[in-house]
Amino acid sequence: MKVIWASAAEQDRADILDFISLDNPIASIMMDELFAEVGLRLEQHPLLGKPGRISGTRELIPHANYRLIYEVQDNQIRILALVHTARLCRLQSSNESNASHPDIALPQSAISL
Image: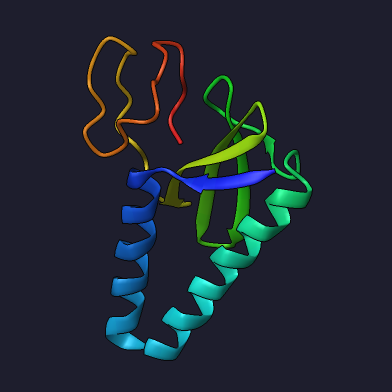
């Protein structure tokens, strides 16, 4: 299966790596390699993550501090977001825009990440 990083997930990844590199550039490189490795594992095992808190998604914890949210559709895996495990996302109904992650439509019944 092909893995595609949504633009919001790519930005999440870049932001995380930029933050880590401020204190430890080598750790930032290692984290980027870890995220890339997870993408390769998902190509072979798309159901590796558990069912997500948002309907139709799956979640994988590639590192104790980060949650990768993705969906499997047809012959592709779309990575929607990469968030800190301690971060609470502001939930919005599917009728409202989600500025930080426009690729994720959150139903009204969704629970916080």
